[in-house]
Length: 612
Ligand code: ADP
Ligand code: MG
Image (tube, rainbow, N blue to C red):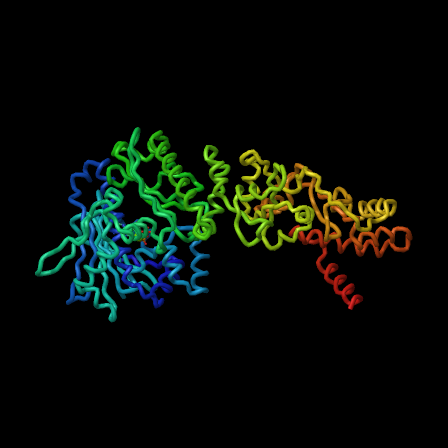
């Protein structure tokens, strides 16, 4: 009985992009299929340890590549875990990752196929770059039934029961008209050597009457000595393990000896994956015990804020038959994590000395990495040291806390920051005027996460980290300019307090503004306006909205004028109108929405017209 099934909409889209792209590196399909075969062997080897039945059945694990120049097919076979019917339907017909649909839409609109291939590794579906029909004959280890999956890569696929003696999978590609060179053994040998030399299992090329040939070294790359590994091999292994197509930004190969022995080969990619902030994103390290794959789901192996790190940890000190549940609470795993984290931090510190180089890392992963400041208490100081920010000092360059400290004038003990959505908006915030005119640098924090870690890191190397609204220093500036008359200013404040009683809790004069007539702020110790906005954006209940203070600048000609106008009751309407516009301006500078945009723009046009 045949089951005809449709691809999930995302898969159809993906196939459409992949198949119709003019992507020149089509040969990567072979690497993807070999990579899958290797994963399947890894899974079987682990199962064989815990399941005796399967252990007995499993022979020597191998990957076999068979070209057929009569049929014009290429078959990639493995004797790994295999798939049952559910696996076939779930793995070769759907994409489960969240955010896929959005990503695909984007990739299609922008036509960035390389990016797409990079993000997904494309994997199995890349077979359709060279084949117009693919057959997957497979039998899952420990199960009786075998299945044949067939598809032309367009609308769907068929699954039928089939005959196969041993567990494992044969993937047969019916090559497209223009792709016949994939039956050429010399060509095949060349691409397998290029892409798949690091694969753990023997890759055997079937030469027909001429016999067969093992093409790769077939030993775990991380277990080899550094001096025996070329940069190219490190890169290829990275692509295999990370399923990425970029070059690694960092490659770290280390061996820990002493109480516990383990080897790590870990990488940091050079580009941000599309799902770095998806809640279901998993950590990227695979755990091996004595070169036997155990699991890629041991979350405890690396902290969440380093979820972009990819690679392998292999320890011979863990028991081979350790269950995945036991791994989670294993003190050995915790030690390995500590060791790996401190090596990564140390290497980041080295690399941070080169500004341009480090910026690549920071732009891709800084936002996630900063989560470590509150997540990893033991290393928070180091993580803070490695963090970078925009600043009023040099707005187009990133700076560090240490850089900031080195520029503090006099005996200042505070590191000031302001939070917002965008550097270019923030830098014009009126709240910064006093700091600017006194030559005090302010860090411009624009990642949502900044609102949170700053709450948990009150100090850095003895310096207080403070939001500018909590400034304690006397920020008033010495003034020689004309100030509004005290009596009229009092009247104006009373007037405004009454006018805006539903919008702000207080109207005050401030000595902190130089250019703007007014600005919005909150009481000391209250949630910043930006944080409040963020929480509302996330549908969070904000039980106590911070009370707003409307600060007016008594030196500004507009405020002086308004104050003078309070002398005559007839001016009330005019003052109201102008004050509303000033309040709106202050809100806009804070990134806050204004109450009545049409009033604002109408009035603005009216006043401009009067002026020109
Ligand atoms: P990925 O390798 O990133 O998971 P792929 O598209 O390459 O994505 O493969 C999808 C899934 O199909 C794999 O995760 C695996 O479950 C299954 N699969 C593919 N090839 C094989 C194979 N040779 N043996 C067993 N399962 C396989
Ligand atoms: Mg794959």
